[in-house]
Length: 478
Ligand SMILES: Cc1cc2nc3c(=O)[nH]c(=O)nc-3n(C[C@H](O)[C@H](O)[C@H](O)COP(=O)(O)OP(=O)(O)OC[C@H]3O[C@@H](n4cnc5c(N)ncnc54)[C@H](O)[C@@H]3O)c2cc1C
Image (cartoon, rainbow, N blue to C red; front, side, top):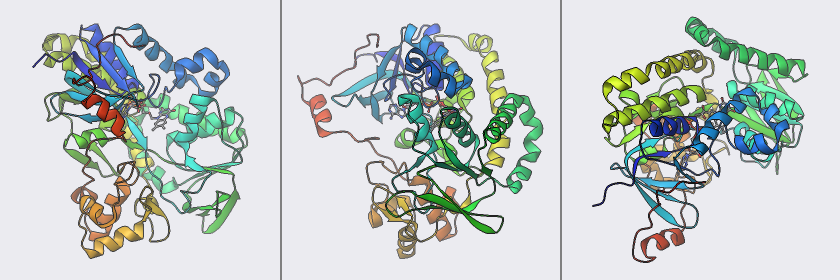
């Protein structure tokens, strides 16, 4: 068997992946970075290079934290890293083999180590009406701004909680969008719960200052911000026409052409699940994260994880974690000694500590509300691909479905094109409540390849072709 073409295959060109690639080539490792996006940047710095070159106004609208990503992207482009842009990874093996496709032909990439930097995704928000046209996640609206300079039709209702909710509202206002209301589920009780974490969070006071400034800017721009809402519903029959919610004992409603939902982000665990790595349940934030050891190592010798995919800590923490994990990998491959690691790592440990210091406060302040974790029996879809409601899941639980994997046989939940990304967390919560168990005991969908849809033609070309498996060549990318 020939030696793997690369020392490291990094999956995900967000802050964690780009920083890891930078650190790895600096110590002489041969690196390939694979990402389904056409350009590096990940979620936060999506398309930053193109926006900087072609749309200066949008760069200002998206703000200083977005601009910061340009340096990382530029560094990656100038390096010797092979960048397989527009390639979706659909299978990973524990020995370091990665299977991906550019949408035309599937490829096999062999590496001594795989670094998963696959980041986060927005938490699904199953409220009545969330499947109506005109409703999308706040992150999706931000993707439109970053990739196409577009803003949704107004008036817009932005509902949910978390720092990203305010950030996106702020960016939309600066881009000229008309906002009807920002309705937050965060209440006074949430602030009280978070108060004990304030002292530690002061280490990251820059984050607190940014949050306060964003809120102030929104208020000064005349945006109505309402806190402590519950019973959120999207009104309209064929499309979103507005929102209604309960606040302070009465029901309020607002007309809106577009409704943006957001309840924070959760680790994208599709790849770590497919690898059968152990996962831990985050009691406060209600999500799964993979168990990691020293500096992103896992129970599988060749597999490492860095960034939000290992637990939500934000972009700058992801960057520091990416660097530390790359150095740990270099150590494991004998490229640097442990003494070298100890020399190079302190600045990144201190960055990590700085950027993580605000996290306990945020986790306590922005818990996902119960009404989206365990939605009522009504027509609200939980699994959008297979059109299954929370009521259907409860009925199946009564009939004897003990967990998410058995539920597949009852309802096909989680077996549609999204492979359980959208419904996985809700199905776990609904089943846990139905059986009177904790989500940690109920478990999660078992994820099998392909991680994302793959056409038979893409596979067939790889398997037959000239008789060989198509290998990604280790030449420099674009
Ligand atoms: C929609 C959205 C918008 C966000 N916007 C902001 C923001 O404006 N400001 C902010 O501070 N934080 C934002 N966040 C949070 C922020 O993304 C993270 O804190 C940070 O980007 C984490 O960095 P990362 O490198 O771990 O992962 P990411 O930046 O998420 O990068 C992961 C990369 O992995 C790639 N990937 C995943 N799976 C595959 C696969 N199977 N095949 C190939 N490639 C794959 C993705 O395309 C992505 O480029 C956002 C999160 C989301 C979900």
